[in-house]
Image (tube, rainbow, N blue to C red; front, side, top):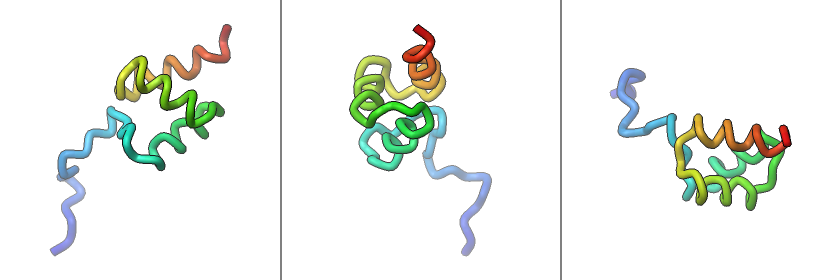
Length: 62
């Protein structure tokens, strides 16, 4: 039976899965920061994708 495109299986794309290396890598590459910087942002801010994107973009605006 094919997977339904309507069901996400509990996956919430508004959050970053901090325990998944590919998520950390993608986020770091997207914002041109290191993986350690990405992990530190997640530790400080949480895993809300919008808040993290804003915080990462502020890193270089200063």
